[in-house]
Image (cartoon, rainbow, N blue to C red):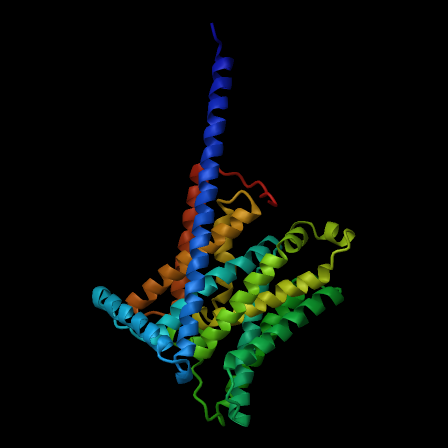
Length: 366
């Protein structure tokens, strides 16, 4: 006659294969989801490329005809949705840029969150705002016809290098240089814009840069985001193991003769690059949310770093898609809409985690 302990053992033995099978199916779904996002990102880069090539008659009518087919599809979407936006090229640029932001922002943000560097995104966004102000002044004074975002990118990268230098070479606590750079760069931006209003011949639509706007995404800005996205993804893939090692055990990485300072600088510079690109859609004030909130949602459910990476990208895409839909339907700024959807996903993930009885144990490095 079997006792209760034998029944318990048998039940545990049966449940273990089931739990492993369920985990395998979940991981397979994550991989499929990330693969779909990767294909979607490649298609959006194709859209941006078509939008660029159609302005070169020497290439023939191919790019023009393909882009016109895209606009026709947008017209049908407008017809069925009752909108009047998808037939316009600026909307396709905004959608393509948003999809790319939904990939690279959580990708870089996963490392920042696990290294407790979430504030660096907000700092570099404010530095980019100072870059926008400097760019506006340069355009007004010199007649420079280049991209405003290119100036913001240069200033933001310089700010990132400055933050890293101050953090490594001053005796203050780690987040003090970040806080100083955050407030100082925003102060510079506001002062330059206020000072330049009296003689600038260019119009200053600063609200779009502060809160995000679908109309802010220019052709050059979309192309820059495409190039930067490819570069960031390539760098993360190439340095994945090194960044992972430094993220979870920086002291051991130093003992192993890793160039920790170099990889830290690389991470901060990648953050600056992502922030400038995402600033077009999310705005300076809200751009850091896309680096942090999808990752925070993923950590509530994920059991490993790689799973956190996958889920944060998927949550980032859901945030972008839901935010765009809400912004278009209600004629609201895109930045606030995307962040509110991201927060809703975060709250749902907490609820799911509580239902599943997840503990607050540390995640695996794998």
